[in-house]
Length: 109
Length: 114
Image (cartoon, rainbow over all chains, first blue to last red; front, top):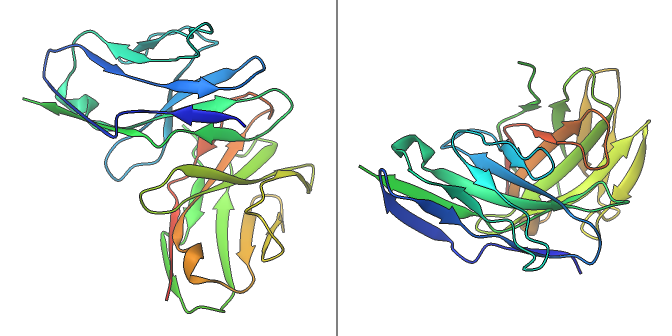
């Protein structure tokens, strides 16, 4: 079955420190991976998707098919990055996104 | 920038009552979705809707649930006879072209069944 695992429920770093939010997936086909972010009391919004290979707000994520991972990274965390981050998997032939449980990132001053 | 909207933001209902959750997708989008998130758990897919019919549904989406696009703008989720375990945040989403295209989410409706 398709599955997305985000092993860290909570992650706390200091401002300016590097941050990495882990995401592993289980899917036998060719995946489409997304990172969604939810700031306090706001909606889920797309942060980035692997196919676009963009850097948004300083965040990047690389799809590693060998390790079935799509970790989200930022070299220098900012306080405004504090939010809930969800990794999601899209699959061929299906409309649904499969979400991980999310990681709550707190960036301390 | 256009956004998905949802009403109401909060709904409290008694067990066994019917509820209708409303969504207005982004206007030129063709694919619509409902997800739910029980407190402390994952966001789970319920159903997708395209061309006025359900294109995919999860095992959660049983006969108690139905979706409808009653006019050109609204997209609704009806729960016929609510149960305590239906208490959750319900998210509507829409996408321009479906498949692996980005899904844009609404702010959610928090449903509490007493």
